[in-house]
Length: 420
Image 1 (cartoon, one colour):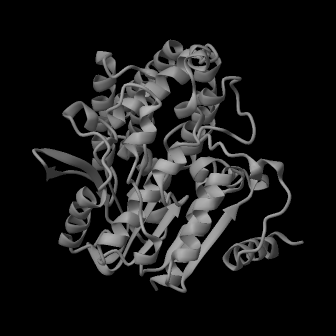
Image 2 (cartoon, rainbow, N blue to C red):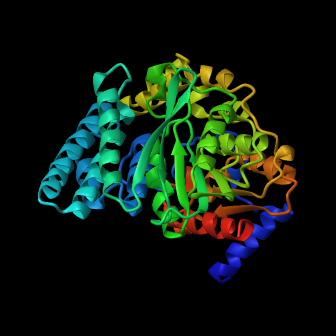
């Protein structure tokens, strides 16, 4: 079967409710968001997931260089939290020094590229740091400051903004599609349980800009550096997200008839929840759909682990799980399940066109598959679609972070259909 025909059949079969066929993995109950279908470099699964998907995946959008990334990886002790943090932090400093030299010489393009990579290396260095470590907030702030310096060297500029919210502020980025300030379609990008707005820039901002779309993203409570200011995850994400829509529609560059929301990971709940409550969102996409976060967390290995299992975790994995707990305001992984009780959206109330993307490896989870079916069957708009991206195109893991070019093709081709 030709590849194009295979893709058409796969999307059609899913929309018609046909079976995917006989993988034993499809019967498994657990959903491990940090599982990869193949190994990149490390034996530690969680470390390998973040290296291959978060870091190498960002290379296509200027967040990493493969040579730099593999050198840093070669110096990291497998599964070790400290060497991970130190190597990415050290690399960030070296890349930043090159950027400063380029800027001093008046070479803006070179400086911009170095600042972007240095920013992202600072960001990924905090994956394995405790929030109690002063380096966490310091590196997070370095990342954000460098993104602003890089953004000022772009045309149109990548603008940093803050939206007042409940005594604090939601940080975000906006980049216009057009240099003349004319109105264009806009993508509101929404992250999940561990994301920073910088992750979302490197996830898809370049793909949006290349297709004539404005790019907009914000950190919600629980994301980025927000927990430092007392803002942890909540079950009404549509409330802070409404401010992002208000902001978007206040800008003359935004065409109000073509405002779409796209969420990854936990954003696969936040984006459709926003569409459920705010009719100004004209299309919604998710990778993948999280109809009920409580039910999904109840199948996650980290949340189900007993003390004996936790004692066997690598330092890196333990640090990652601890960081997720911090973002939800709980002190034990088991608390993540209850923290997500009531964290839902109602597919029947989402009246706009809806797209589900899900990697083939992630779709092997029985609970993931069940929630995609609930969403797809419940969306009332006939312009609904589900696409399972294939393993043999390197597009199989959680959020398909490892093939962002393919995500851009699927997402924006669909958006151009439903929001012409």
